[in-house]
Length: 502
Image (tube, rainbow, N blue to C red; front, side, top):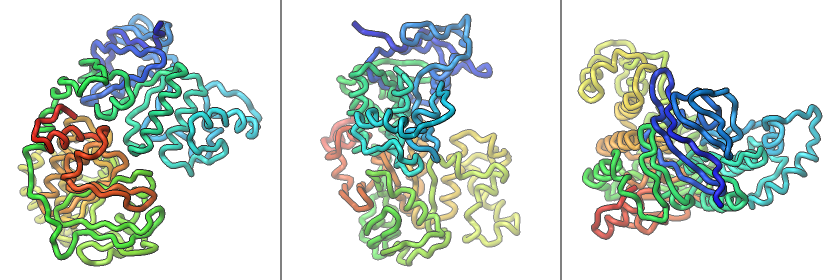
C-alpha cells in the first residue's frame, strides 16, 4: 500500500500581489523519486519557500506525511522537516563534516560537544553512501560531490522524509551523477522520498519514476519517464529552441589557421597536469571537467595575476603573461549577478573593458556617444538611461555579452553559461554566444555537466584528473551517453530525422 509523503492540493500562492503558484498540484509517495522540470522560473522560488515554511496561502492545502500542515484558512509560519539541497552549498566551511551534520541540525541542544562520539555516530551513515568521506574532514577541503553528499546525509540524519535536490547536475559531473543516483535509490528503498529538480528531461528520466512539467507556476503535465520524451516538451519554447539550433548553421572553422586563437602546451597549474588544447579562430570548444577540479584553476589563469607552474598558455601565438589581458574575456557563472556594477551607469558598464581599443573613452564623451549610437538599435534606446538594478534579466545578459563583443578578445571563456537558466534564457544565451562566434571570437565553455553546451559546440574535450581523457568532434556527439542533454538532437540529426525533444 502506498504511503503519501507530500500532497500539494490546488495551491494558489501570491507574493506582493503577484500570483507565483496557480492551482498547483503535486503528490509524492514514500520511496519515490519524482522529477520536476521547470520550463521557466515562474513559481520555482515560491515553491521552495512553501516547502521550507508554511506561509499564508491564497487557496489550497498542503499535506506532509499524512498531516495537514498548511491551508488557505490558517498558516502558522512554522518550518517543515523537509531537506532542500541547492546548487550553492549550505555547509559551514570551517566546521567538520560531523559538526555540519549534527551541531548545525535544528534541535541540537548540547553545550559540550564530544567530537569522538559525533564521529562514531556519523560513520555508519557515511559508510552506507559508499563515498570516500570522513566525519572529521573539514568542509572547506571537500570538492563538490562530497559536499553534496554531506548535505544529503545531514537531511537523512535530521529525519527529513522528503528531500528536494535543486539541479544537482549544475555542480556534479556525469560520472558522479551515476554514483548519486545509486545513493538516491538506496535511500528510496529505505522509504525516503526525493523531488529531483532538473532543467533537462534526459537527466530526470535516468533516475525518476515520473516527472512533472512546470510552466508559469502550474504543473502542466505529469509523465512516466519510462516513455519517450513527451510531446509537451515541444511546446513552451522548447521546439523553437531546437529549430534555432538546427537552422541557424554557421560555417564551421577548419582548424587550419596558422596561429590558433588559444593554445595550451603541457599546461600545469594547481590540479591541471600537462593539459594540451588548441582553439581555432571562431571555434566553440566545450571543456568538461569530469572531477570538477580544474575549472577554478583555469579561471585564475585566464583572469590574470597567476603564473603557470609548467608548460605554456598562448593566446594569438604569444605567451600569456601573469597580468590581466584583454585578449581573453572571462564570462563568469551567472554573470548578471557577478559581472555588473550597480554603482556605475549603463554606459560605464558597457565600456568597462573598451579602453584598450579607445584610449580616450573615459576622457571624452564623443567615443561613448558613438558607441551608444552604434548599439541603440541592438540593445534598445531606453536601457542606456536606466540604473542597472532596473534592468530585466534579458537586458542584463545583453549588456554583459555586448561588453565582451566590444572588447573583441581572441577568446571568450564562458563558465557554465546555461546554469539555472530557463528555456527563454538559454535561447538568449545561445544567440549571444553565437554572435561572438560570428565575429571570429573563439569560445571556450568550461562545464562540469554538459547542459546545453553541445547545442553550440564544435568539439567536446573531456578532462579527468587534470588530463584530457577523450575528444569528440561534432560528428561524434551522437555516440555520447543518452543521458547527455541534446543527445536526441544529435542522434536524430545523424539519422536525418527530426528530434523528439530535449
